Amino acid sequence: MLSRLYLRKDHRNLLESPPHLRKPPTLSPLFSDRSNIAHALELARTGFEDEGKGIPIGTCLVDNKTGKMLRVGWRRRVQLGSATKHGEIDLLENIDSLPARVYRKSTLYTTLSTCTMCTGACILYSIPRVVIGENDTFLGGEGILKQHDVEVVKLDMQDCKLLMKRFIEECTEVWWEDIGETGKGAAE
Ligand SMILES: [Zn+2]
Image (cartoon, rainbow, N blue to C red; front, side, top):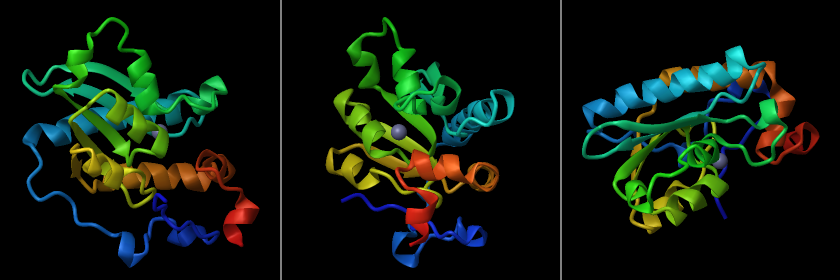
């Protein structure tokens, strides 16, 4: 079963993951990883600040050889009333006519650790490299990605954590619902 950050009802500790879930960031990410994840973070802000408190998770897909940003997406579950419109899925739906080989030589950037659904999508499309802004707020399917020989890079970016913290403080019930918990259930 996938690990999930233990979320306490006490919001003061929302960003303190248990010691057994704490993993150090990747020691030597590419220089471009930080600029690409910064772009994904701006997309996350778009969803939260410009589109009416959407869940702030941004994504982008970058060609490994050229560094070109191929497509972007952000989580729009709240905006569209969708059960599946995660950033990664939004991005994949924006791919339109790109051939399958494009996925296989690209890196997917996401500001928050990939959930089970999006982990499956990365594996399905043979995306070889996934860069994660942070995984303290939520720990998704990184172990599964590694089992499928996907390179997982963790940046442990404070800006990504702070945006999620703001969102969770302002939209707590939406967050509980998004990760399949209820406030009451999560408190018990
Ligand atoms: Zn997802």
